[in-house]
Image 1 (spheres, chains in turn green, orange):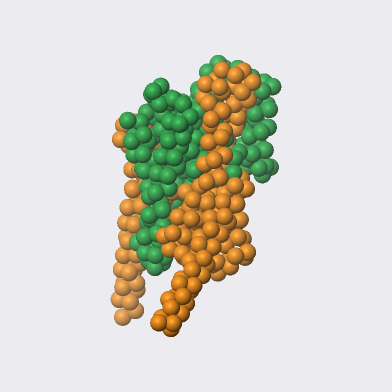
Image 2 (cartoon, one colour):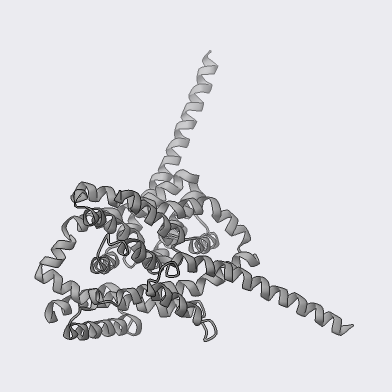
Length: 189
Length: 219
């Protein structure tokens, strides 16, 4: 049953997804793309659309993945109503663990945030979160996203480098960079 | 008899105004976070400053230092930062019901907007429509770049040095390897937490024994 599997996957994502939306991508890639519920290409497309629409990336991607995954994994669950059910499932489930933790654990953390135990744990998590985001970037550098023919790969690498320079050094807004990349793609691919 | 009726009426009217006040705040929590969710582009971090403006400056629901305390906790918990902070604010104001109102407000715009897009922009459409497929072929490598950039900014914020750089590199490569078991990101979250705790204890022990030795030297 795909919906139960989605619940289990998104519970894990919500419970262990430390470090914000980008770090969460590593979990989503493994839990959702791994079993083949959506393709690697669709995953990247969903990340792009999640960045271009308002709201948190974690919620946007959960809603989108929940809509697409049931139909892809089993044609019996294709269609808008099954998609809506999947969207509701993933979006609510990804919020539940942190909702409960915020209600019941935040007082504890607040009280002990100066304690060595809490400080130590979070100090240890920080470099791991950097690694998680890096792994998401590595996982997406694949033929599905960069093409398989050498001409396409070269064009893709050029777009990737240009986008990095624009976002990191020139400080362009990510949405602007995505739009520009889309126009470039329309022209050169 | 008359008096009793008055008491009941007073009780009921007070109850009603209390309810109204309460539901007003619940509703205004929902509306405020819905507005933030609907109009803030760029994910959780972009939302924080807007949330602060609404919650602290505009509505005065939380004092600034109180908000920063809540933000620090929301950041240290797993899950979606913007949802965590809205839950924390709602909880402070009206307990669990406030938390649910605020969280639903944050989620709803995303949910509706993405649902509308997902209904039309299906994987098959992107694959089979030549215009869309070439547009997304250009977008995909750019998305990778958009994820590389925060790797560097978070690494700097986490003060990754040449001594500690082995940790994120090993984590990234192992997850990327897709090897069974050891490529699971959950393992690294657990290891990072436990490792950080042990490291803190060890360095504190060293500090203590160092202090003791110093004392001994003085004598």
